[in-house]
Image (cartoon, rainbow, N blue to C red; front, side, top):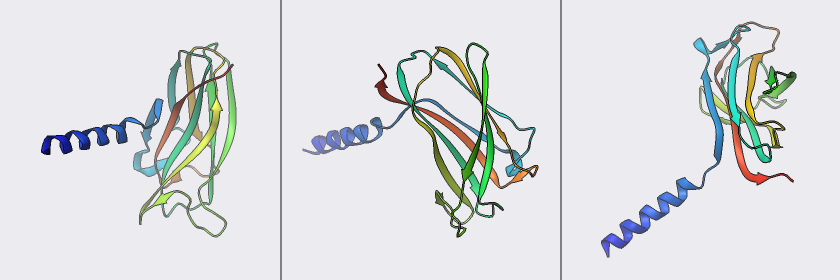
Amino acid sequence: MNHFFKYLTFLFVLLLFGCGPDYILDQKYDIEKSEWTYADTLNFEVDIQDSLKIYNIHLKIEHSTEFPKQNMYIMIHTQFPSGERISEKLSVELANLGGGWYGDCNSEWCQFSLPIQEGAFFNAIGKHTFTLEQYMRIDPVPGIKNISLKIEDTGKSRG
């Protein structure tokens, strides 16, 4: 009977951890001295093998609870396999108007996750590069501990 409970516990743990998101990219950059400078461009590369799959793209920022702003601006550059490059400015709201932080916070740091695009797809197979740059009026931006980009395979296809 004891082996039965061990087997059942093992199956439960396997199911619990085996059903998480399927990320084709899950990459994090630690920001030196928690100061994101203009020179610190963050490059994320992903090799897309199926242009019919649907993905969710998430940005995760870990920042200090002493971060001096309500939001921050990030420039996102996307380079496609053809060499074409597009850029978009993103305003990331880290706190509400009352100063309360979004995300999960402890006494020193907050982890904030932002869905950049849900239901995304890539029209071309091959290497795609996402480059993130801080786009604030101050350099460096203090209190940014790390930044992650995650691309989740939803298991769905278009068409």
